[in-house]
Image 1 (cartoon, helix red, strand yellow):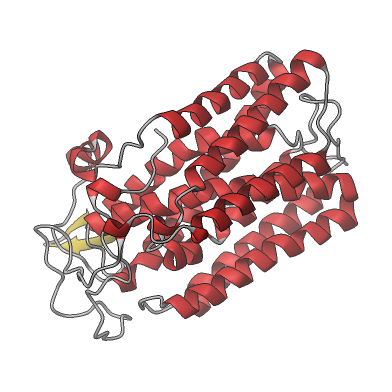
Image 2 (image 1 turned 90 degrees about the vertical axis):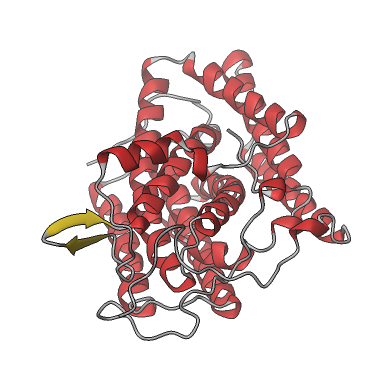
Length: 371
């Protein structure tokens, strides 16, 4: 029996009969990957080194690409092209998200060995939020076809902002969202290992890591406003859209530890993302207004070419942002909060306990925030 089959959107895109067991395989596989990551490879808190992050990034990307073979086996070549287009769109747009994480974690001086646990739960929350956004977006398209114009216009507007507007940096100190958290959630002033909640004087309190997690989740909601409509431009199918988003997002933790210090090297990434967003925005509008469909192979080729050119051109530039060069600054815990002297149970002593693997991002050269 087909389960959650798409009925609206672009009729030129693939329509699949996805069965409930196929959804079960996808969700079960994702859950298994998360459990292996948190219970095997990162069971004990430790600082993720660059070589470890590089290996993990390669593994996550390989898994995401390999799942396209499952799509090919189950649904054929056209669906595979849509999956890879969605995967590349989400992966490229997520690079900006990684740099915002770097700013948040550096501002709050999160000890390096606890960063992976915070990002793990951030990724888990992102998967849930993306599922909600995807099915809500597909529901709107099915009920109101004119929503495609709204999504397309939103993508064009965001592309223009990336090109013509100076990127405003994320300012956690003046974040209204953070002030709301501090007002309504009782928070401890001290870390308790990598725990999100702790018991102090018989009262259950959130640790500072919980506030960081909520702030990361809030930024992901903002980024989803761009990425989900972009993927909706290349596929109507919930299974294709969610799976491509999920596998692109799963590898972001490793990508963070690999790229967070390299923001200065991605000189032309913002322009490349603008071109990609503009392309999919035009594709969405033209498809609805003129019934002219840009083929999936062409879309995939354009996205891959633009992303490749932006990255290669960035690395050909000789240290374009020298003021972003890494320094030897170390994290020493949260502002006005000291880490307990005794490590939490299960946390092995670590001489790099308070040393961050990445340089705090300055306000003058902070990560791109499209919003």
